Image (tube, rainbow, N blue to C red; front, side, top):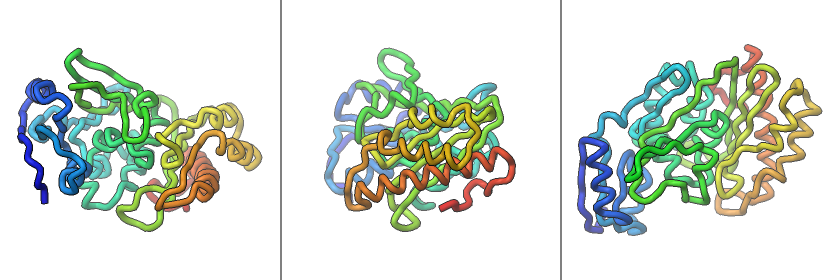
Length: 295
């Protein structure tokens, strides 16, 4: 039960939503899927002055591709992503990451944009968006901004979003070269448990690799030093083992209710190995299908 009192607004245009965000200032809370906000309202952790429900703004429902990017609007749910043949064809790594989010009931409501705005260290969408070098599309009092995902997460549950701004969507570049990826996570059980460790690898033709982790530091992050070791070299056991030795320098795990920092550090190396091998085999055309378990 929600006991806090607040104003409720359901604008039908982005301009109206931004006007409301400006009117209520720090007391405004945008609502899309609501899987985080409603929980905070119910347990009393948030008492906003106004809730601005974005679900009446049709332009935020867009899920479409241009010549060079896939645009995912702020109202697009993880189920929308999973059911999209466009996403599965163009960005199968993002599709695979979406299938790992929570439970079916949560995926039916939760949005990709809401996931990155929550900015929890364990967010499953983070590694896939990082290796695909996505941009966060923002609109606010000063106009439009395009924020690289590498600059978006500023700390646990903190982002680069400014006062009065709204995220309108995410633009994910479509790789022009042949590519394949893998997102793999460790968790305590199937369902709504957050990741203990998550790792994504994107393999591109020409022996190029991008790697990112979640749940092993204050924010989801690219592993640049690991990428430097991998890039330009044919992937083999020795190179993977060399990359794994760099994992401790790329992460900063903690101990919490879900896992110890020692377990997270060990599993980061295990998952990196699985993700790299799977991405490389998929690129070669003989790997497991997307969505199949590799751990």
